[in-house]
Each structure stands twice: as structure tokens, then as C-alpha cells.
Amino acid sequence: MRCQLLFFFIPFILLGCTVTGPAPLTPVNLSAAATINTQLALAYLSDDDSEHAKQKLLLAQQQAPKDPVVYNAWGYFYERTHDFVNARRYYQHALQLEPKLGTTNNNYGAFLC
Image (cartoon, rainbow, N blue to C red; front, side, top):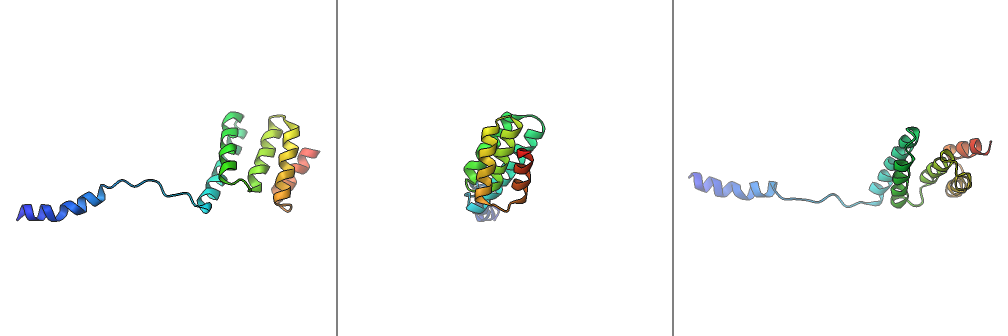
């Protein structure tokens, strides 16, 4: 009887042991990942860790290449690292993608002052 019960439960036990990979990245997941990576980049910048900030921004840009928030963050990154030519370029690109984005307008206006 015990052997019969054991054979009955083995398939269920094995089902619990299957290995599954990570969920495929959908556009929604990529956008959320880009948002998180952008936030991490800004946190690294506030800690004066520009190298890690740059890595996170590169990843965010790959994940959401048309997200104006990512380009705004790039503008801020370049402003903080004193690359003012690229700061202007990225702020302007963010505004081309979304002209009414308040944070970009604010950051770009402060940059121009």
C-alpha cells in the first residue's frame, strides 16, 4: 500500500521540482524596468557615483529607447558631470519626445539659467 501511494505522489512531487526561467520581458515589463533603472541612476547620482548611474541609464535607454524620462535623466546626468553640450542635447531630445513633461521643462529651464 505504501508503495502504491508513493508512486501516486511521485509525479506531483516532480512537478514541484521543475525549473522555470524568468518571465519573458514584455513592453510593459521593459518600461517598468526602465523606470526603476532611471530611479536607481538618479539615486547613484545623488551619491556622486556617476559610473553606476551611467550604467543604469544605459540599461534604461536600451529598455525604453523612446521614454522622455530616460532622456531627461541623461540630461541631468550630463549636467551633474559638467558635460553641458550633451546635457543640452539630451534635455532637448526629451522635450521633443514629450514637450509638456513638467520635470524636463523644469530641469532644462534650471540648466539654462
